[in-house]
Length: 591
Image (cartoon, rainbow, N blue to C red; front, side):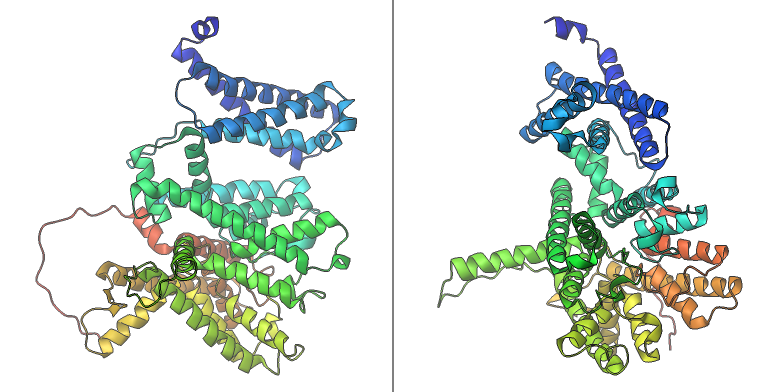
């Protein structure tokens, strides 16, 4: 009764929660400073004292939310809060009050546990904030672009932390690396494995994960998890970003995206671990980190590797099991979340209705489970993979594939045909490829991955629509029909706008770099620009040697390739109002 009377003032309650959130923000700032800079003993004690204040405020506000009972709290939130408070209290007691307990719970005495608790406190307080999106301030396209710019800027300064690298990193190179990681490209101006410290590599893998899924995906789902809802405008924006069919399904879609991503990455990391040779690593933790880093990098189609020569490194280039796992990860990541979810639904249907409950000699209605998007994407992906593998195998049989034999030749050829589809890993010497193979890689890089995936390029659906369009024109049809469906006119218009804009951006990039770096060959510049736009990450070896203006051009192309030029134009131009009239139609001479 006294507690309720004390906190009966809404203004007082809001102030307490606001102060706790502000403290958690400062706690996050000091956490970054603590990780990234060397400190005196006195300063470290001050920071530890502030950590204690942040943690105490976080516990108090969490308890207050239940004491006040302003709203119904779901069981998953209650369980999360109970577990987090239990861990937090144990860590605080061991670190600040009981050194004897450290002997019994020594694993909790690691200083990093305090930092994890600070991060947990910030996430909990941030998720409780009411963020109401207003379209009058930023439209969905602008919000999408700003979110990526924000991660890139934060990542740039994180990579410049003294403890993130062994020799320090200039602003230009930090910006380039951050953009490459967030845009899941993989182009690098420094060697990831030797230039970055373990902290720097952890920062990189976090940027890759954030860039692959998008910071808005994480922020929105955390907010929904703790608060159980969102404003109508927020749901509209998330519907556009997640390609949800219905507004009411947006958070279920977010949940599926996060579950699918982490499930595949965890499984991929475990399998990668069992394909490795322990003798190639200094410790068990190095082996585990390698597995986690490459699983995330592969599924997000980032192409970053802690190996100096990627999978072409001595000791890894003949590890075909590892290469097959990496292929599976970046192919799944490149398919896109809606396609993966639809395929899972289709497999589930087949298993239940054909295996568990088979009905022989009975004519049944077969529902349209595998939608047209999935069919077009899967057919295009399989066709490009098969064609690319055959051409690569034939072209490079006596060249880069000469050191491999039998099954190894096939795996290497398959890897070489699939990695240009925005994955960015290499298990061969790119500079030693035949010219015809490089032309094939240009083509595959330009097409890229599938829509709503972690990959770039013009996308498989765009290429498929363009192909179907010229086949329809050749047959004299006035519409595109496939799988007993007619492709909407807006899809055709978007496809050709995407193709035109991609060639415009890549062409401008080639011209500008040719001006800034005249000594570079046209082939190497074009390869770099195609790789940057399609967020592939493959290079013929000129990335680190580019001048600052040329690096700025590549940074811009990587960013445009990730968010798409069409999205940027939508963000810039004011949306035209629908008008109830049509002008007379006239045909334009084309050829």
